[in-house]
Image (cartoon, rainbow, N blue to C red; front, side):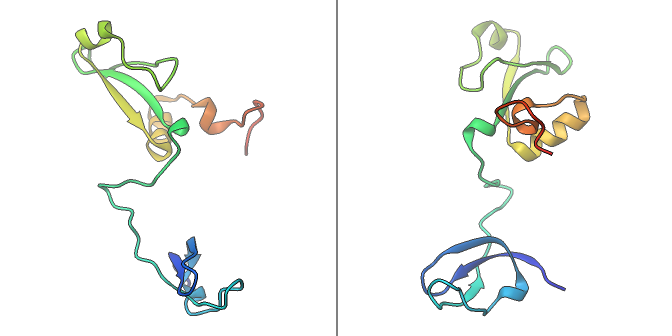
Length: 121
């Protein structure tokens, strides 16, 4: 059974994310190098990289019983009035956002629809 892993060409250094273990030691078609295992650098301390445009920002207040505010833009600082009320800024990557969507029964438009508004699935 093949296992999904990251591979690197032994000759040119090209990285193939999420390749199959059955591709190990096979020829790289562009430079005649071979595919070798690339140890993953993804850990819980360094989550999967994502584009900052894709991150979702919410403001959560523990003092007000977990109340949530949705800012209009993710690149603006939190207003001082919310800081005084005990809100904190929470940034979510796409994986965390999927979990948030299911739990709160909401949908993030950018994550689920493309730029012209049609569904991507």
